[in-house]
Picture (cartoon, rainbow, N blue to C red):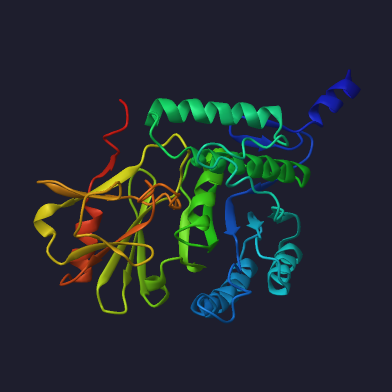
Length: 361
């Protein structure tokens, strides 16, 4: 009987949101997880039109090394490299050497993104196991119930990729004697891009890991897609409700810039909007992340003006897809002229964060 009990206790299991490695051993409790997504994306672009990103990235690379060195003994790093280069390999090697078992590396090839393109041309990969497929089916049902039928089906590929990553992360934690309490563990995201893959994948990973707190996106440890942010001065980020965080910068032309970003999401979540008081609109402009002015202008899924408010999309860090003028959840930035920092901050913070009213009740 004692032998049988010992055998049963030796198997790992999930109890609620807590990963238990071995009831007889003393697993290391991880209190904070750092997601480093796609570092050194621009490392092979030292010349040409992306040289500005290459130069910006070099400064952030130094900060990544410093941040990895500062990771505490009860913290872990989840690292997903993308670009193949010596510098990228050196960063991975440094993280693995510095943190040991507390560095979990996702293979470069571990990405199903794009498999659910419009029309489902590439279909669902046959390599997915039955448990993951069942989870994806659940995601699809929940998304249809919450969002109806009119949403980009390729968002399912993000759920698919995140689920496969999370399974690898859970397996690595279990094998290495690491444990998390999803109800209390905190998380941060670093990498590239701030308003793209970094924000998107970290918020999906956190959801499928069962984390109850949104990911804190660290702009100062990231490279943005938006070209105007490369020259802007980062001021602060402020947590709001509904897992949203507000970011503020001062642009090169001295205008203030605000950006709403979600830190925890699933494919079933409805799009969110910040409703700005229409009486404060003079001096405001809204741009997409390419720097194109989209308001003042025609209403769209990203910005909509009515008699009372200007509804601005909260970024889910999603990319625009063929056939869509703008993708719901695509990053947009509010520029303010003639505001003090305090007034601009208060104006954006006081905006209610609401769900997409066009979604089915």
